Length: 145
Image (cartoon, rainbow, N blue to C red; front, side, top):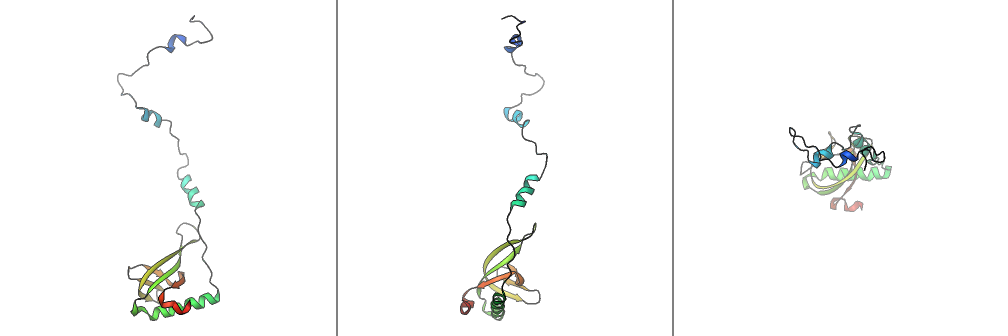
């Protein structure tokens, strides 16, 4: 074809050998692709969206009857410290980053019942705030069930 052909003006350079630098090392395909990787202009935005989408539960308000039963169970538990009863505790754990929290259950052997600090300590050293407990169950409470 003619070099002045307007249909394909680059015909004269299309088949030339690709230039390779003699002073710089050849870039791998991985390095070349990295140049075009997405850029996170809003650093932390994805984490903020994930945190907002994370669901938390609201603290349960016990009825007067439920509070009364729980109070009786706590009294029985306090009086049974020396027997080292095995108890299943269900309690509320407040979320550190947003309102609400979650309910967790822990089975353990009672080690200490501190009425002043309002903390129950288990044999594995875990501490559960008395005010966060919503349910107690186990052999000790068989009369309540």
